[in-house]
Length: 532
Ligand SMILES: Cc1cc2nc3c(=O)[nH]c(=O)nc-3n(C[C@H](O)[C@H](O)[C@H](O)COP(=O)(O)OP(=O)(O)OC[C@H]3O[C@@H](n4cnc5c(N)ncnc54)[C@H](O)[C@@H]3O)c2cc1C
Image (cartoon, rainbow, N blue to C red):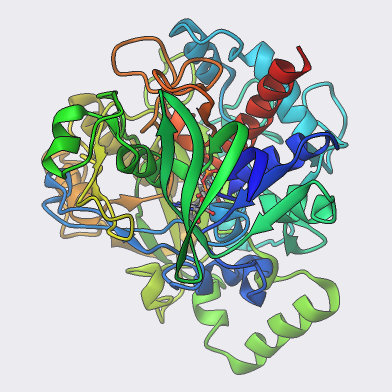
């Protein structure tokens, strides 16, 4: 098999690239995905993330190493393994980030990545159901809907945040992100709008596009400093697939550094330890790992929440009926309803924490909801300074890499998470939510009120990922950069990376929308190269 462009990984970014490059009927495009087709019904029902996360049919089910910053706990790290990648199992929350995130990328020397440069790509990708104001897009493939599920407890929390002096926002995807309000979702007609649904399904009939599922790429083949093909395991057989023009890695923040290292591109000393011949010594591969760590205060309350509604068989039946008949109700719910982008200090230029307000609670999502009525006011730091790494466990592609997130390893990160917990408590003391709260279940009385050390220790004991690993093949021009601002891998020609791994610094919010934008940007750059 041979294609002009070989795209590896059909996730948030990969599906975009497959769509845009195959729009040129003169180019042949191959898209390889390790997971299966996205025909598992729960992928498409919004609340199905409860069924797809932790399920090997749709999730790689990675685990981190015991993390010193989390009192040596190891975490489950889900990543989508199907067409659409993580956009097929994620919480559907749509957040672009702050203009300053992208202006910072530009300031790091990445030409073409400022807010002014990327705004047209965000607009081009989305079909926002709100108004056309010059900032939002309305004709793109990705449908972005307003929240459709209301729960009084979430409304009360948002009103309490306003009473506590925080701003209200109708649309945090404007250039000023600050404020509390309702989440927007990648959902179309009550069904998940993954990157595969938005970008791949409408074009999969194209004669010049070949999509192969259950095709696990083991290695990129490099000859004389040039990427020429991929070694791919398909149904137990290993095949070589050639690329005439370029190979584009879209295998995500864990898959892309792993695949580069397996192909001999990475820190030469580490590669040698695993008996891999170094093709190009690139010490930054797998470094610079960043993620959003969430801590999840839980409040028992005297109001209806999904916890209690789920226990009533009649209400459960009602939810199923409501979804079947109208594609609405709790089954059409994104992972959170309310949000807030707030500053922990008034002197900050932009928000540094984000809330995910959920009308349910659980000790661990996989364990199911609590039996009592409660809501969760999850808070995360938007721009952590802590940096972790992805490294190889062995030279075998089927062995998962070693994931070390290294959470809460700087003072700023510890201070910000503690400040976030204090802000949560202060909001919960305001009406109208305070009189609905019957008990602070977590952190609770066992954690000394507003004592820095005890709050920090609680965060270390209970903090968990909000599923946003990025940065492991960072774009830049310093010694640790992996790709340049055209997303070309340093030292190897005809090879680019386009996914969440190229972010030099994490964006201030959920990372699906920026990953899709990266796919759009890469496509423009590749098309421009070959137009010449
Ligand atoms: C459970 C969960 C919840 C989340 N919730 C949200 C949310 O609500 N909002 C939000 O904005 N973001 C959310 N995110 C994060 C967001 O979805 C990701 O940041 C984004 O999807 C990353 O896109 P990507 O293109 O980098 O990688 P992915 O979408 O993960 O795509 C990588 C693809 O490459 C494939 N692949 C990997 N290795 C190989 C190989 N060797 N050969 C072939 N194929 C391979 C994978 O199977 C996958 O399909 C969530 C993520 C998860 C996992």
